[in-house]
Length: 193
Image 1: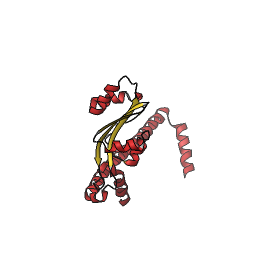
Image 2 (image 1 turned 30 degrees about the vertical axis):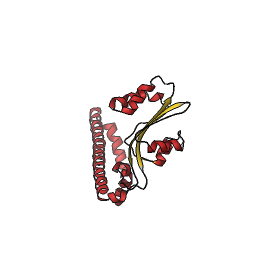
Image 3 (image 1 turned 45 degrees about the horizontal axis):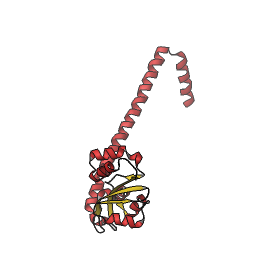
Image 4 (image 1 turned 90 degrees about the horizontal axis):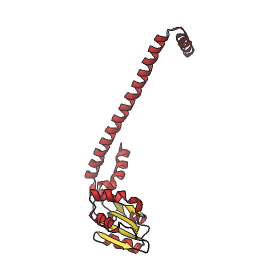
């Protein structure tokens, strides 16, 4: 059967007029394009629906199971940066780091190449292990001092000035924020599906 189709196809290419072959080729290309476009649109639509459904399901699961998400250790939202002591913008950097409005974030981001180390994503919750990994350049005593400081903490050594800001802290026993446990809940929800 496939051999007969192949022979007929070859004969059609030889015997049909060029304008008919061109017309058929254009129709096949158009059909092929439409198939791919429709498949892609369906994929995007399903992905969007899955994302919206997942967000909704994660939120519902979190709200109905908050007591299961009590913190077993404190978590923190922080930001920090370090730069050489001889930096000419030292005062401006320190001022903007403390104030930290939208313009300040943009300013600090534009100078990030001057920083020895920095972490300005203060919306992320981190536990002590994460903080130790991020603040590896500080000894444990300075790290502990920073985590107990009210808000702003500054330290320096012979090479650099270190600026830290403790944005927020949640103690052990509090309900974890959804952003902190979202990946865990996503795994639970999708394993139930």
